[in-house]
View 1 (cartoon, rainbow, N blue to C red):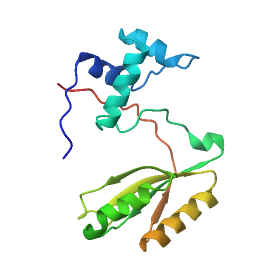
View 2 (view 1 turned 60 degrees about the vertical axis):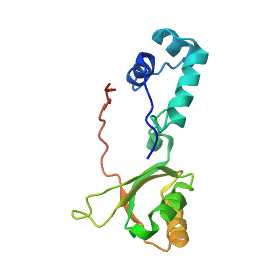
View 3 (view 1 turned 180 degrees about the horizontal axis):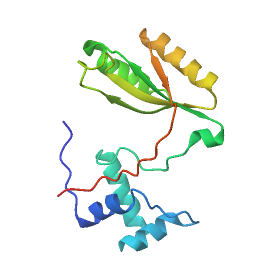
View 4 (view 1 turned 90 degrees about the vertical axis):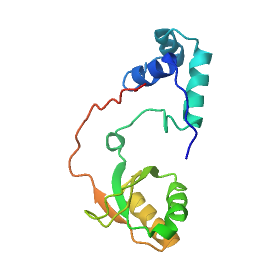
Length: 159
């Protein structure tokens, strides 16, 4: 289990304020830091610490890959518990995997590993699926996006 990380008021402000309003300009970290009342160096150091401590799992933009000609696809697998760590490491080793998570309510669904694949084309995503299947020996079920919904979800930081 990861060690608990203490968040001060600045850490909480960083997490709260940068969830949906990162500046788009030549010096975005300097502008964001000024808005938080800290130096750019302090902001960068804090973000790095929060990432290393896994308080944040990712800090970066979300792109609508389809608008750039690419493809996003939700995929799922049934991974035997005895192979869980091995298959997680394998799937996460593919640069096309955007994120991966475990679904614990297996009574409702046979799939317990879910991940998002991104690629330049449907053929590229299909090739990645084949490579994952070959490497793991397990089938991958693909769920292409039929409709997109925008959910402006922001997660408040609790003390």
